[in-house]
Length: 157
Image: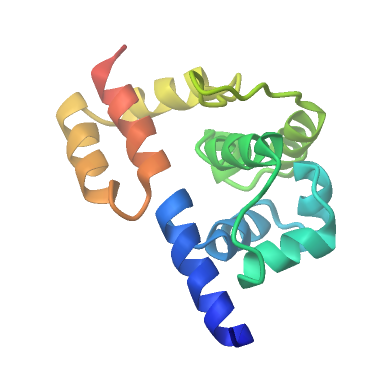
């Protein structure tokens, strides 16, 4: 199979498995935390070349579930108001927290950041339950992880 066809197939698999191409997710994190791709790889616990291959579609998946768990944790930390505002201390603390984390991943749990409750509380402070549910519906197809967080915030559970 030609290289470009392999890349297209892998990116299609990433959409199926992760909701969108991993390159898009990683690029958002690089921008949100204002770090290099190599530094982000260190935080996630993956080699920079491996992260590059996953981002470009030369590899379809992240083989280590702990690396994926850390990526999800970092994505969720983007919802913390101080992180979303780009405050340097908050960005550095979030990156350090994720780098030092030892998430466990099993079939019955999805990794959650300790700060999820802060994100949920912040969302509840700025929006009504119905608005959070509507936002979750709109984001469900393209951003399922964010939609799930909005749904949880809206359920007050």
